[in-house]
Image (tube, rainbow, N blue to C red; front, side):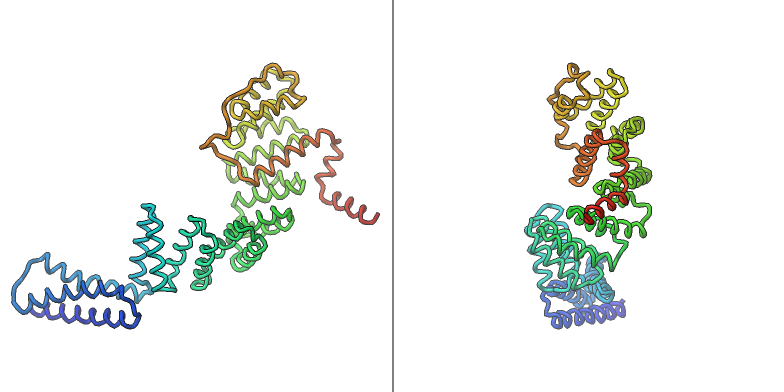
Length: 400
């Protein structure tokens, strides 16, 4: 027993000295609490040794915990490159964020990064809080510090580009994303954002190059095919758009928006049977359910199935009453005009899934093209769908 206590005191004192000199070396007062805890454990053990009294298992366990176990664990973690004090700050901050006390969490993190400027986790968490509060520039500054600490933190690169877009610095965002993709081409989030930014600038061919490059690293990603389909649609290359929509829907059977767009493309080429098939599938998607019913109603009028047309149109209006006006303005619905009812329900109620801005734009483009196509001959449509023929026309104009 005596030998055990002597060994304990030797080990505990050694850890105490290590902690003390580490505090001096790092000029970090956070170690004071740990030193006090160690000193208390050593004092109790020393008194027990001098008096020869045994204070029980609970007291002895506490002295071991305070003087050996916890300090030993800290030494081990720091040997592995893990800063225990940093870990405590991060843990406390995370708990505060869970309880929605971002203000106090931010203060603790600022103290952390002041003491430990190389705290990757501290800067990143601080950036996330600034972002939530709307302090975009401060968030970017923190993410830049994260990259300075760890050049391979690709998420930080992406976040900076994403935030730059929010500041309307799209050229800077595009440059950063291009650099990120060169370093890590398989990082699809970067490709997706870069493609969207290029599409916003109507640089659809450049966006397609980005998506095709991303496809090399993930052939089973339906998002890539879906984004490619949108870019092809904006180029009026409906044949390739159809191929990509079909591939996306094949990979993800729940991608009802792709079925809806396929229905629109089928209508452009006056393939009513195929359009009907796609719209019957797309009614399962909340975002496109109402418009799918609307187009099905239009199809059934063209097929001479008046009762079906009435039922589907009224279903569409129940979900989105703005379609009532649209139907009344469309000459195709004249035969059933008297059967169209209005609805007080609104499709755009809270809780309903909504289309993303890029999906709204592409579906509007397809709709406009469909109504335009009704006034074109089939031969004109084929030419519009042939990129090579379009280029010849442009070249001819230039020669003239």
